[in-house]
Length: 172
Ligand code: 5GP
Image (cartoon, rainbow, N blue to C red; front, side, top):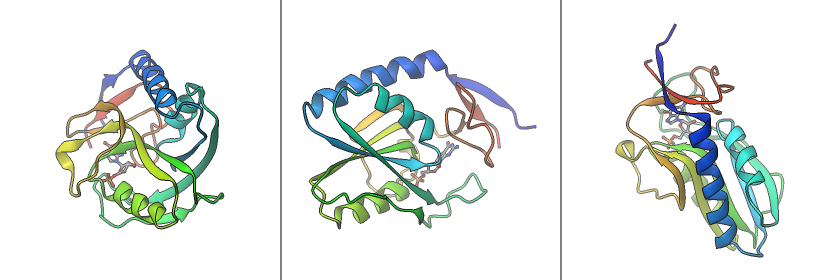
């Protein structure tokens, strides 16, 4: 059994997402946004965030794998599932659970930009800047977090804990 201690409560997360929803809705006022969630970690954040948006949205997902079954990044990003809709000429907002080294989003953003969207912005629930390996800046950040391994609210350790309502620091 791994030891875990609470880091962000469900209430805190909910409150911050309401703020993010207002901020993003205001920034895109009356414009349609193509919201692209990065599976699997962002699925719960994405579900809550899109419901806090008051602008018209289209929803899509990509699935990437960069960690395998380890808690350390291999540095290799693999697209397992691409978007089902064209992003050309669209305002794309990528939704991620956590930015760590930045390698995943750096790769995804470059790949998306090559398809000539109107713009690509990034919204991440958690940002771990201490571990950045490439200069990647998210446009919307829920919480800046320390260099620790987090689980819950979509984030896993070896595919477990995604269903927890709060976010925990886990010793792995
Ligand atoms: P990056 O490419 O920025 O290093 O990593 C992004 C991905 O690594 C995230 O989408 C997430 O799946 C995984 N990741 C990074 N840090 C953590 C963490 O603290 N907890 C969990 N569960 N996953 C993490």
